[in-house]
Length: 489
Image (cartoon, rainbow, N blue to C red; front, side, top):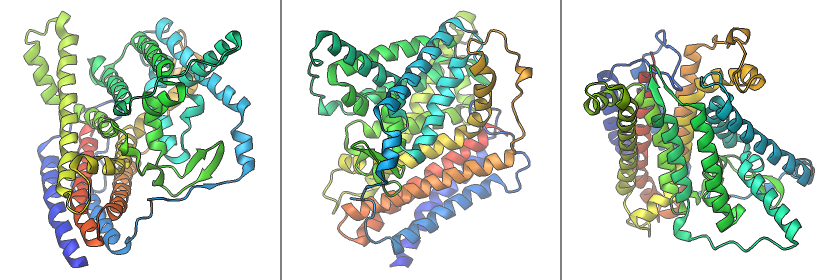
């Protein structure tokens, strides 16, 4: 049986590898910027060999899973408390209030710096804090340490403080919230994530080699989103809105579901890695949320390399005379068009894989299968995010914790006084990024295999369904390597 599985796996995978290798040869690399790699012209191993090697790792992992992993291990995995001392030290009311106050303070500094600080993005605290420290660093840490964002969530903290103040003044409990519509699910969070990524990747003014975002725009967006969050909390309740509708609670919570650490009922506890993600996709809108997260990172990489020519071509078609007045609008239209197209491609790859699994014996429809397996793509979303932005975080956090913190308005600090260390080896960056891509996809394979064992009636049928999952993993791995290699060389 193992030989049959290996043959089918090889047949499915090599088709994908071959197309990926052809793509790597056909698309020449170009200069990029946002989250791109450091130059890697002296790589000791050719890029095409990385692609083949990564795909081979996935194939070997798939065969090993099919042979050795015969029972579901993540389904119904147990959570165990770590002890009362740690919970008492870190999970108490004063510390929660302090964490919330820190979150509100940082939100206030972001808005203040954006409105009144320097218009130069590299000097203004708000740009690096929002798009690097907040969006990326918290996401990276959440996958290992659990839901760190919840106690620092400024919108949750402010809403809780306001609700407590109103209750103290009126001497009445807050009005009962409306029941949250089940069909609404995570769709408000999907809308928020799509808007955030569009603001970051398409709304800014493209100036070679980066997309420039006005700090004032970031401040206004933060105020608008705050109002949006407070309305949602007022209507449906603070905790319910954070679980379903608040974009960043859902985003960081998605990655935290991979972590072995979790807080339940006011106590710290441990669980097996990745087991917290089981069942994450059953909430409506979850598939769209994961796909938007993957597509956003994929588009950022593609816009720096594979799609740069196509985006420029559409821009010239819209604005053939290069009129200054229509330049920004044309850029936003062309960039938004290909951003949407990237989401369509990612969604098509996902649903093609789900359709290939087949519903026979699963007792689920195609849509239900999609929800059952979407949690397997959370490690891929994380791997894409980490691989693409690792170097950006490394360099920008040096700026964040030097002149940006001491001079958030960017009024007087000289960059030369706080030089950024650029000595990190470009080869090391490449190895870290490729390693994270492969590790993320191997984790996704394991999660998919485990879910298939729980859904399909036999080991043989479960393994057969995962041939398509293997093809999906190889596709996303090769795509990720293409984006990394084309972003900068």
